[in-house]
Structures are given as structure tokens and as C-alpha cells.
Image (cartoon, rainbow over all chains, first blue to last red):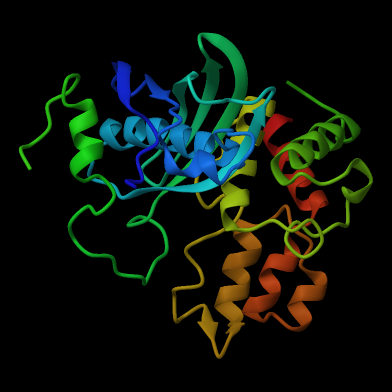
Amino acid sequence: MRWIWIDRFVEFSPGERAVAIKNVSLAEEHVHDHWPAFPVHPATLMIEGMAQTAGILVGQARNFEEKVILAKIKNARFDDLVTPGDQVTFQAEIETITPEFASTKGTVLRNGEPLGQVDLMFSHIDQNLSGVEFPKENFVFTGQFMRLIAPFVETSDD
Amino acid sequence: MPMTEEEVFEKVKDTLIEALGVDDDEVTPEAKISADLGAESIDYLDITFRLEKAFDIKIPRGELMPDNLLNNPEYVQDGKLTGPGLEQFKQQMPHADLTEFEQDPSVDKIMDLFKVQTIVNYVMSKVN
């Protein structure tokens, strides 16, 4: 299993807004444990899907120079369940962005209908956590994440 | 836009309830943001952003909570603020009540200075 909880970006406005979709499939391992008789795509993985959508939006806004990591879930709310066959849409918008942090607001849709809200805060760890040294290369934005937005923005060849 | 202290307190209280997920009755003027309300470092940032929005003010980095003192050896020695350190701290934090802190200015007590009233005082100085 790869830790990628969005399938495709359908909209990408640098520095402002990004929209990504995720198709939930009965072929995914995790729904057979959650739960055996009643497969449901977990809310935690939808929060992660939003974090990936918004995190890539925030990272690209500063040219992937920062190591952007999820620091706080300000608000997460889902009004219904998501099951195999559903398509989840993550609409993320940057609310605030500084060299050290970013704050995003997000709406989640299920098959095009409103499902919930996920608002997040990200930390740019090189600018914070003084004294802790991180590897020079950006280990946050690698491979698959970069390929997802290749259709929308210029990225350097891996 | 001038506001009364009561109005500011109510809005600060709402901000803290949203940012920290605490109950209405936990947010008293003397409540310490970290020790009593459970705020961690990322929460301070969330609170700052929310206060900026709620009161339509700008909170420059280091103004609500000085961030340049603790790394300076002139201001901090053996885990306590030195004379010059305390002076500098007083200057940068007119919104905090330092009377108790002055008796024993140890660095680990700094976070206790941030009470709800401290934030109310700071916001009052920005909106009035």
C-alpha cells in the first residue's frame, strides 16, 4: 500500500486553491478491516487526503523549498459515511501563508455533494524547531506527490 | 475601532474556545493558556491568526510573545533571566503582569505569564 490518499488533481491555482479527487474502491485493503461486514473509507484517511491536497498546494506556493508537514487539525467534520464506489473531492484553499506556517480551509464532497469540512495548519519545519537539523533534500515532496501536479505546474525532473 | 474590555474579553474567549476546544467556563481571565487550557506551541500560532482575523489587527511576530530573548546569553543565565534580560522582557511585554515573575524569573515559568487577561490586555492596546 502506498501512502497516497488522493488520485488526481482536477484544479490547481498556485498559491490559492487546489481540488483533488479520490476514488474509493472495494479492492483497497483497509476497507476490509474497517469494517469486515461494512466497508467504510475512514474519516482519518479523508483528513489525510485533505492534508495531501492542501500540503502540496502550500508546498508549491513556496516552490517546494519548505518541508511542509501537518501540524494541527483545526477542525474536521464529516456529516456522513463514504463507502466503496464513492468519489471524494477535496477542495483546499490557502487562508494564510508565512515563511514559517500555513493555514488552509477545505471542503470535502462525496459524489459532488457537500460532505464535510477540514481546516488545517502546516509547519515549515526548517523555519521552526530551531536546533533540530533535517536532511537537506526535501523528503516531503518526492516522487508520486510531484507527479500529481506535473500537469499543472513546472516541476524539475526527478 | 474602540472596544470595551468586556467586548474584547468575550471575543478573545470565543477565539480560545475555537482554537483550543475548551469549554466556556474554563476561559477565565486568570486561566493560563498553556498550563490550564492546554495550549501547545502550534496553538499559539493558530490563536494569533484567529485574533488577527477577529479583531482586524496585525500581530507582528514576537510582539505578543517575545521570541528573541531566550537565545541571547546576555539575557538568560542558568535558566533565569538576568537583570538586562528582565528589563528587555518588561519592555516587550507591557501586556503581562510580571510582579510575581520578577521574584523568580526562571525561564520555565515564562509560559505561565500568558493568561487570558494577558491576551485581552494586548488586544486592548491594539484596538484602542
